[in-house]
Image (cartoon, rainbow, N blue to C red; front, side, top):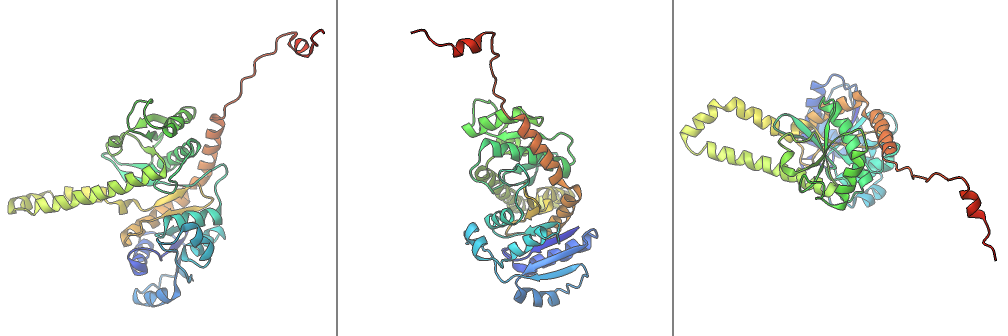
Length: 358
């Protein structure tokens, strides 16, 4: 597998991500080539400082960065030599199989859509985020790429999410739910009700509506919503996980007896921390593109990139786009409404064409 990594645009700078590249290359012998894309003035000294001498590495210069402050569409049009575009072009040109970037989500989406195009039949790509629950993990999409959606778009997100969850989480028939404010199908919005009606006509394992409390209690394997709601769910859950971690540390250190109990339970606490760590799940792929693109958090550190490299290798090996294209075509056929034509009775034609006597 050949990989392109954009190391610019992250909160911690290129050095932290290059440390992640080192970890990923050491752990993933299946990566045959790793292109590092970024500003030459940053990469040249860091290459020496970090001892980046793996023969699989190749550095590609890019003089510009699409920052978080840039308007995504304008940034893509004006900054032709940005690191994210140069990395995407390596996939477009067949030199890399997957691209990973920590940069501006809108810029990554716009750049990948313009440079790679969408899979046949796909209306909009969606961010698919793997998140933990009490038994394993589930997939949320859209995680923030499309604030406004149509029912047809959410249907496609459900199809792509089901394919992704089945492959990446080893699920035979992923349970799909539409996020809403109640389980009754009279609730929700026009968007959720119309989406549910479409899902009912496909072969997906549709569970109906799912409520927020079900997400982390193993209620569904794939949760579908628009990117506005999805991004709120994603960031709220991330902050809740951090808050619980802070509270645990504070309370367990409150007195010597609790500290002793924490030491005795250290193995279990470490395991919970690992299960709740978003970095352990890699990044969020943009599903629906004619190529594989993985977005990592702007604040991602080396471990997150290391696991994103593992995720990229799995995505490329499983050839998910082939399966998704077939599944989307099948869902489109299943949801086409064929107009019913009333049968013509004998003599109807003559009667319709007969002249009314004067």
